[in-house]
Length: 205
Image (cartoon, rainbow, N blue to C red):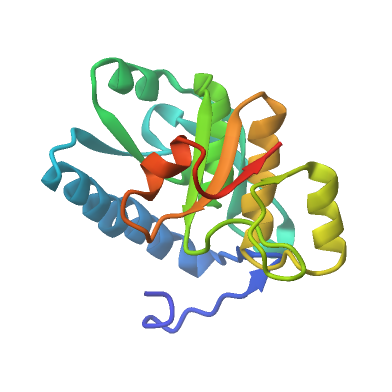
């Protein structure tokens, strides 16, 4: 959408910069198109999904992450009552990762937002679904488990780069709070069940 509108952005350490002219487009796409399609897909399968955003009831209060990223934010506070109430009434919240502060909206990395929400609601487990089988070592072998020290080694040797960096950092944040955290391939049918059973993906500890 941004390229179609000829709005330029760049990736910095795996995060897409969001200039002022892009933030309204980001809100429209994440909160409108993407959220609605995900909710519809879940409900078509018999789920009870409800689409909400990080702006609803100030779910994600946020602040600027770094100046060079413009309107990319980081979660400063989570107000999880809406999510807890929805779950308690057997609804599945689908949350668009947009944060708010007074007079501003922020584009929040979805992995970081998920980790912040998981910590706020006291989740037992957190699974990040992506398009790879997990975290791989220097030889390309998927690791069953990985520790923070091993992660730092892979970052140092540039094995972990790009969009995997914020995903890994989100995993470490959640794991530090005792949440069982895992990265798995979401393109495989039944992968979420397999990941929750500990059969696939990489567990971060």
